[in-house]
Structures are given as structure tokens and as C-alpha cells.
Amino acid sequence: MKLFSKKNKTQYAAVQSAPSGSYTAHPFSVLNRQTAFAEREMYKALREAVPIIDAAITKIVRLTGDFELVSDSKRCQSALKDFAENVKVGGTATGLKSFVWAYLEDLLTYGEAVGEMIPYSDLRGLYGLYNAPLDDIELKEGGSPLDVKVCRKSVGESVELPFQEFLSVSLLAPSAGSLQGTPILRGLPFVSSILLKIFGSIGKNFDRIGNIRYAVTYKPGEGSVVNPEERARVIANEWSKAMRDTQGVYDFVCVGDVGIKVIGADNQELECDVPIKHILEQIVSKLSIPPFLLGLSWSSTERMSSVQADILTSELEYFRSVLTPVIKKVCNMHLRLMGINKPFEVKWSNISLMDEVELANARKINAEAENLEKKQEAEN
Image (tube, rainbow, N blue to C red; front, side, top):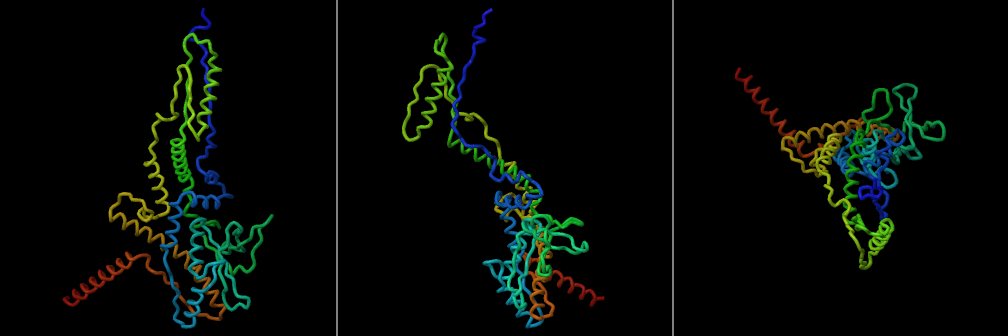
């Protein structure tokens, strides 16, 4: 029996790899930690990681529209107008609309929003409004299920804040008996993490195209007395020197049967358009935003676009119904501190010009129907 036959000949291989950096699917690893403690951090990272989600929330806030405060009393109307235009919001903004827009953005992103009303020192009205950071706040049930208390987080047990009447709290679609709202981003971290993995893989593929890797294979000839392992080590060292010399020309010379191939050059690139579109469809359906508003040129008919616009209108009307009590509470507090006890209304503007056209067509159809009914009554 031949122990050293060609079939049993030991094969030597040497591998020399250049440092390429650690691999990470995407930099927003918090999306993979869906815990209750990191929920707000996760939603914040989600808006930063997926621009289309951030654009959708911004558009919802803008499309919610403008509002005005209307009262039959001239004194009340004057006080409301001055307050809505000049009240301080935070450290840099002014105007009641700035407070409402930031309030709605927190409500959409986190499902909760807390605002603080800051009166003048002599209690002659409200001096400013403040959108409270939710990380420092905890909501607790008061003496009854209808009483909500805003508490400040501290070491140990949370401390109830004083002057609860100067605080406004809103929850978006809370569950029955729960003091936690439902963000419109809920359900998106999973599909978004898949989208980010696809984008991260695409980036790595293009990185490898610009910085290709090589596989150098050495096959010793028949009857060679040279140690194959030692020869492979020498070839690997010389090839590494050639790859590290990026400033000039470095010749690589070797003897024997040496083959050089680009790693991954013969691999087929995965198709990513279809899965990316499927994921974006899930995101758009959750946010209730028509695709054309986000720059997505998906094929759709004019009828389909109008239906999507109607769905968005119903969503915006719901958000307005959540914001209206907050606006009334703030304005009522300002009027009471000024000694004014007059009723007023919050009137929202029409969402778009399409609404104006639809309302005009509806009035026209109703007028025509009323004229026909009068003619029929006259004939009878």
C-alpha cells in the first residue's frame, strides 16, 4: 500500500487577508432592542434611520392645517389674537401654532404629548408654553380612572408635579384602561430593520466593488522539492506588500502555477427592488400617506389617488379632534387669568383646495335638488 500516493497527498494553503473593518448591518442597532425602556429611543432612531418615515410625519403635521380662534366678544377676540401670535414657545419660537405643531409631532411619534402653561408672575395671563420632554415624565392614575397625574421621574418613586391645572396631556388612541398612547410608528421597527439591512448590504457590495479582494492560489509542480507551505507563505507576504503599496507601482513576480481571482466576482447580485417596494408599501399603509406625496412614483389611477386623499383627510380630521381640546384648554386658561369669561371656537381651515371644490360641488348639487323639489311641489 502506498501511503504517499497522489490521491492522499497533503494540500497546503495560505490565506492573507487585509483588514476591512468590522461589519455592521446598519448603525441604528437600537431598532433591534424592542423593549419598553428603549421604546421612545427606538422611535426617535426610526425617524432618523428611515427618511421616508420622518418625511411622512412632517407632512402630516403640515397638512393638519391652520386654525383660528373666533369669538363674538371684541375683547375676547382681541385677547385671543394677541395671545395666538405673541405667546412664547420654548426658548426660540413664538405663537400658539408652534406649540401645537410640536405637540402633534410628539403625539404622532411617541403616542403621548405633555405641554406646560407658564403664567406671568402677577397671573395676568399666560407668558409662555413649553413642550415637556417625555423622558422625564411619567403618567399615573389619580384618585379615579378619570384623573391623570403628571409625575417627574426621580430616583426611587416618581414625584407628582404641582399645579396640575397648568399641564395638558394627550394620548393617541390609548387602550382601554391604559395611560399609554399608541404611536403611528408602532409596527414599523421590524420592517424598517429589514429595510436597513438591505441598504447596509447594498453599501457593503459597493464598498467591495471599489476595494476588491483577491484569492491567490499556488499549485506546486510535479516532483517539486520545495516545501509548498513555505512557498505559499512567501507568496502571501509578497502579495500583501503589493496590495499595501498604493502610492506607486509594485510588481508581483512568482514562479510556478499561480492563479489570481477576484473574490465574489462571479456571484450574482441579489434583486432588491421588489423587497424594498414591499417594505415601503407596509410603511406607507401604516402612515396613511398617499405614495405620491412622498415622491414614490407607483402606478395609480386618478380615482385611486382621490380615494387615498380622502383617507388622508379622515386621518387629519381625527388628529384635529385630538388637538382641539388642548387648544381650548390653553386659551381658556389665558382668558380666565385675564378675567375674561366669554365663549370662543376653534375653526380649522380646509385641508386642501380639493376640499373647496368638493364643498362647492356639494352645494351645487343640493341647490339643484332643492329647485327640483320646489318645481315638483308647484306642479302638484
